[in-house]
Length: 251
Image (tube, rainbow, N blue to C red):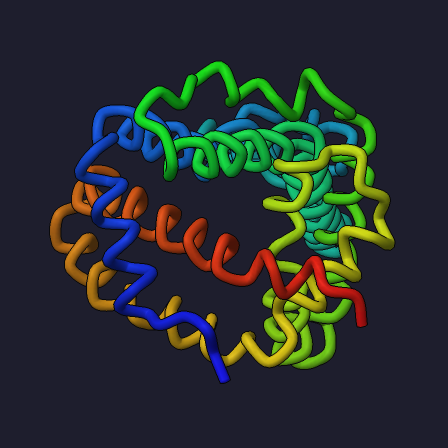
């Protein structure tokens, strides 16, 4: 039987939000920027097209516009285009993955540390946002690397196992926020204990915010930045606190 309820977690989150709205707005803006960063970063990456067999294609386009005779090599053209698409997709995915592992994921751990302090004190310091980069950074990166990797690999099995595992690993960033020296095995084991029998209820809790996100779409994301995101991450923090005792109990 659950020791927590959605209404209780959300009520606690609203209380914290009303007390510390200014700081939570800063956190919301930061998280929004982090979500946009990978795509903005990879858009700046350009592959020299002449290495991918496309120089002839652009040359032929120039010939067409100049009304000169064109010597098309269709197979080479299609191979070049296909190679270009594949290479850009792979490079983009790799850059986003590296950026997430070494920057955004550790920063999210720091955010969670701030949230844990913020729920119990109005004096929580924003300097906690540098926490993961100051303490056991490499261990945090290692544990998060395996969390993201395992979730991705499980997700290859028709999505559902990946979703289940993402809930099983959900508490790992919070655990690292409180103890950055946790080993990979410890972090995964504790998170698994915390989420044992709680995954469905956590999923329902997440679904209870869908209406807010639909409304946010009509405000071009402004509602999410100014209210929904702070409310959601504070509710997630309350869930961690509610399950923390369960995770500390040994099997």
